[in-house]
Structures are given as structure tokens and as C-alpha cells.
Length: 296
Image 1 (cartoon, rainbow, N blue to C red):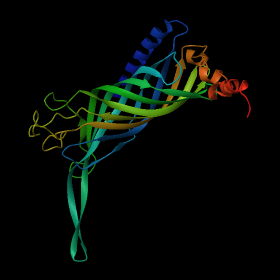
Image 2 (spheres, rainbow, N blue to C red):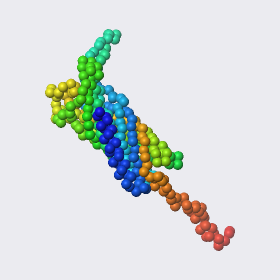
Image 3 (cartoon, rainbow, N blue to C red):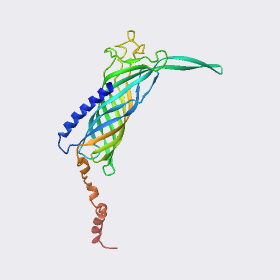
Image 4 (cartoon, helix red, strand yellow):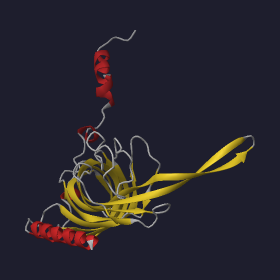
């Protein structure tokens, strides 16, 4: 139900955005793109904890781009509204088995994992330099973004071990949990242009700077918490990262094409000017000085 509500929210925003863009001039340099895919999530704890990455984390969203009319290297700017699954798998305890290895004992640890999924709304503010190929039918781009985020909801689950099967809704506490976050993102991709339709692929890495858990100066222990919190003491740092792979389907609001396609770049003056060997080397001047001379 949560995912359905998130999709409905994005669709409502998309319809509002489309109506706004359609009211603009026909020559507007805008595109609107739907994105969706999967990826991997990871959280960086300090002090270090034993963790695993979370795979098959869904992402989908809406991207708006405004393309500059100036040719070459300027690129596009835009805003994304993206739903993203984030989180971590934390080894909350382990058991050991021992084997004799020569004269030494070798320990093998068997970890029990706690999994937490965080559903977030992401708002990247994007700059996108790009290049065109194949007579403006292929766009290759890179992206850099400042990202703001809001954590909508969260769930937890004990995957194995003593508490295997324990799962439920993660209850947010103001002293313990951060709803808002920020970070940076970078990526690259391409789009194939078929008239006003664009189909493509992109990869993006979200690098978190804010923490999902407030540090222990504000929330020291989980003595009053239930199974939703596996940490004996709150980590000092807990930023979340994501690597996403997405398919894209977009629409260009300009039938003619982007204005930068039709900019004729003037040739450089040096290229137009013919090279005059005599003028550059002073050969004519030397010939004139010797014209009236007496040969000996």
C-alpha cells in the first residue's frame, strides 16, 4: 500500500508538471522523463560495523530538464523527484566455530543479520553536460547533483538467527531518527531520440552526507527500544549510499528540436585567412632592397 501511495503521489506531480509545461511557448527547451529501475544500497557506519549491501532496491521517478540554447558544453539543468529504497543489512550478533589448522585454532564466525529498508523521496538538483551524435539522434550525458531527501517510512526484519522472522514497521523517534537528509550524486547515461520521444539508460550513485541515525551525543543507547533497534549504542555516523540503474522514457515539448541543433558556429578568423609566405618571412622586402643594387 505504501508503494501504491508513493506512485500516486508521483503521478499527481507529473500531471501538474505536464500541464505547466504545455502552457509554455511551443519553442520551450523542455523534456519530461519517467525513470524506473533497480540498484544496490549500502550504509557506512562509524565506528565500523559488519554489514552487507542490499540488492534489488527499487527506484522510480520523474525528471524535468531545461536545455540551454547555447551550443557545446553548457548542457541542461533540471530537477528530479524520485522514490528510492535505501537501507542496510547489519550483523547484530554472531556465533563461532573453531577448526584446528596445524598448531593453531581457526575461528569461523556465523553472523545473524538485521535488515532495515528505508523508503525515501529524493530531490536532486541536477546539472547535465551532454554531447550529440548520429545527427542529433543520440545524446550522451554525465550528471552532477545536489540531493535533498525525506524518509517517508521504514521496515525492519531479522533474516536469521535468534530473532528470525521478527519483522514489522519501524517506528520513528525524533531523538533517534533523522527524517531529512542531504548528499551529492553523480552519474552518466545516454538517450536515443525518436522524434519527440527519448528512450535511454542511466546509472547514478547517491553519496549520503547526513545520517539516518542521530549520533550518540543525542541518543546514546537503545535501553528503551524494542527489536526495531539492534544497536547497543547508536553509531557516531550512519550515511546511506545507493547505486541505481534506470531505464528512461521521455518526451520533448518542442517538435522542431532543440535550438542548439541549429546554431551555425562561425569559422575562426585564422582559418579563413590565407597564409602569405612572402609577407610573413619578409621576402618581398628583401627583393626590393636588392633590386637597385650593383652586382659585383
